[in-house]
Amino acid sequence: MSKFKKKRGAATPEVSTASLPDIIFMLLFFFMVVTVLRDASLKVAVNLPQATELSKLEKKSLVNYIYVGKPLLKEQKIYGTKPRIQLGDKFAELTDIPLFIATHKEKVQESQQPLITSSLRVDGDVTMGIVSDVKTQLRKSNQLKVNYSAKKESK
Amino acid sequence: MARKSSRDRMKNEVNAGSMADIAFLLLIFFLVTTTIQVDSGVLVRLPPWSDDEPETEKLNKRNVYSVLVNANNELLVRGEPAEVDDLRENAKNFIMNPDKREDMAETPQKAIISLRNDRGTKYKTYLKVYNELKAAYTELRNTESQREFGKDFDELDREDMRVIIAKVPLILSEAEPTEFGEEN
Image 1 (cartoon, rainbow over the protein chains, first blue to last red):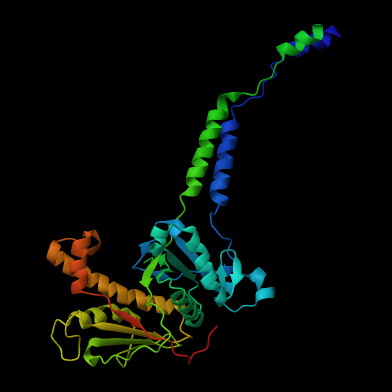
Image 2 (tube, chains in turn brown, blue):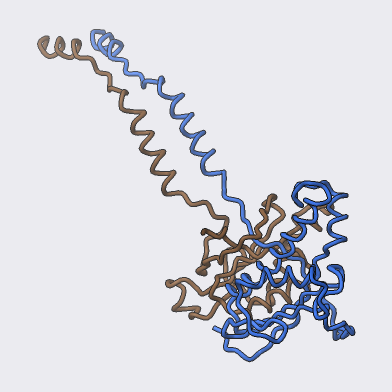
């Protein structure tokens, strides 16, 4: 009995914490690589076109996003391959746009409402038909500040 | 009794020394993830919607720079086929009309860009054309403000900006698209 006791007392039971920072660093890098922050999970493929005359949209709370593009591969079984509109995180019809704009408008202070911008994130290969329809809807709901989202042209 | 003392000696505390590091890393993590890339794009102001047919204003033909984009993404500028890459220079030339040509804008204030596309035009092409036209105006405004104030247009304060805008106003009218091409 006494034999065992002695052995236990002599051993240092601490776990070495020297490698802890390394582990945390690995975690940090892992998350840095993996996280892609997007406010809505995209259901349509949007490959933005390129442009040079870009301006930045500063206030995120004053921007609403309208995505247009072909449904992603996994959605194509249900939604087909025709370009579709995505508002928030679900597919929408043209007629849903006025309500979407109005709902967003309500969340914004009245003095800031004229500054609301609609950002059209449209895939480059989509034809203008659907884009024109979206524009018409925006005009009808009096949302005239529009941003054609684009990437900086790389030369 | 003997047992208890042995336990006391073995008190295994978690090392709190690295807590600070963990907190720092969390901080850095959130810093990194919250700097989201700001969305950028071409800002446009749409005309308000009206239900009645737009009035067909009588315009002097020389003041109108009409750009048509068809469903095959080809350009027709003032009745002539054209390339997107030449658009910027041509538009600048048209607006300023340095040679005082009879068939180009009388003054920059009177120049009107008329853009029309087809429902089958690719968005990519449309945006490129729009971008070129806007770029033409940006360049003109920059040269104008360099001459007047010795600064670029976007560095001016509001009042000076207005002066330049009055000199080179951006008038771009978009007609309802034609419906010849096939949509995807």
